Image (cartoon, rainbow, N blue to C red; front, top):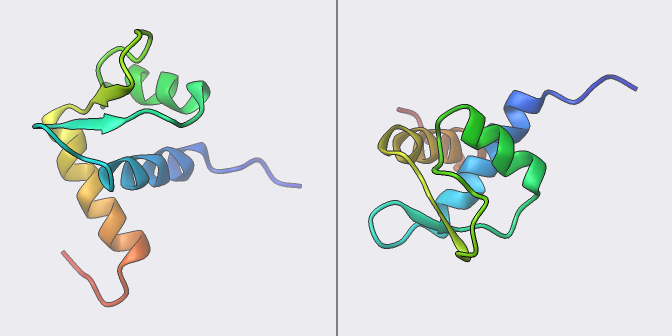
Length: 79
């Protein structure tokens, strides 16, 4: 079996997180720690290792998450 494309998985995670976007860039963090760690290392979210039940997306990540969500999950959507 081929190795998964982790960049595509991370983009998918951002797109899914975008669905729960609220309060100026905050999203719920009920996804794998491995994914949130990679998103943090890429600079797309604030440090996920805290007691808060949500994550803070960077402004660039909010834009990327919306674009990726539309590309991956919205038929006929093009930016």
